[in-house]
Image 1 (cartoon, helix red, strand yellow):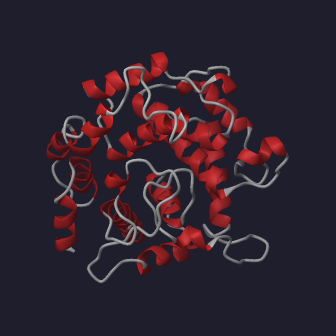
Image 2 (tube, rainbow, N blue to C red):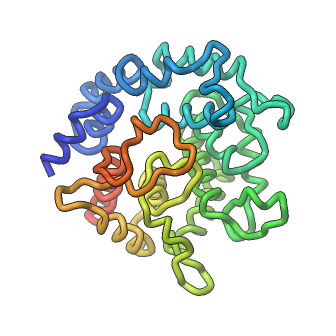
Image 3 (cartoon, rainbow, N blue to C red):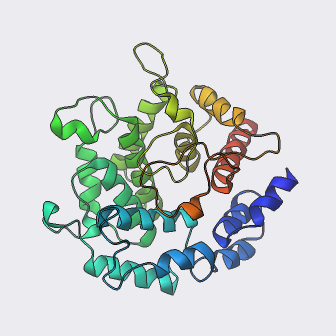
Length: 307
C-alpha cells in the first residue's frame, strides 16, 4: 500500500493535499499548506487562468458556455481549491457578477440555477463550496422530490419515477449545503429519503425485479459529470457519514474487484464532453483520481465496521 500512496503523492498539489488529509493522517497544517498551493500551482492554477475576463470558460462553440462554466467550477471543487484564496475569490466574483444561464432561462444569474434538478443540485453544491448560498434553489429541489424519494429531470415532462443520475446530483448538493450552512430538518429528511431510494435498490438494481439497471454504473469514471456510478454513490454515503448498511455490500465489492494487483484503479470510461482530459487521465490507465476516491471509500467502510 505504501507504493500506491507514494504514487498518489507524486502528483499535483490537488491530489497530494487530499491524500495527506484523508489517507495518511498528516498534520492538519501540513495538508493545509499543500492545499494552499492548488490555486497557484499545477492544475488549479491552469484552470483559473483559463477563465475569461467576462467570467466564463470556453468559447461557447465546442461546448455551450453553461456546460464549460459549470464543469470548470465543479473541477475546481474536485481539486479542492481553497475557496477563501484570493484567486478563487476573484474567479467567483467574476461568475457572480457576469455569468448567467442565458436567454433561455431569463438570464438567471449562475448561482440562482435554472430548471433541471440535476443541474441545480450541482449549482447548490458549488454555491455551498464557494460561499454563494441559495435557499430558494434548495427550496425548489425539496419541492421537486418525487414520491419514491428521488429526483428526475424528466419530471417536468411527466415522469413519476426517479433517476439515479439526477438523484445523486441533488443529494450531493443538499449535503454540501448542510455542511456549509448547517442542517435543517427539511433538508436532512429529503436527503434521508433520497439515499434510501438508492439503498433500497442496493445502489444499482431494480426494486421490482432485482436485475442490474445499467452495467455502465459498474464502470469507474472521473469526472463523473452528471452520470451515476457505484463509486460516486459510495463516496456520497461516505461524505454523509451514513452508518454501515449491508445494502452497500455489492457496490463496494464491485469497486474492490476493480482494484489492480498493484493496488491502483484504472479509469474505465470518459464521458462525452469531459473537459480538461489531461487532468482527468487516460482511459484504461491507472488513475489517481479514481484510486484516491476508491481508497477513501474503502477506508470509510473499514472504519465503520470497526466502530
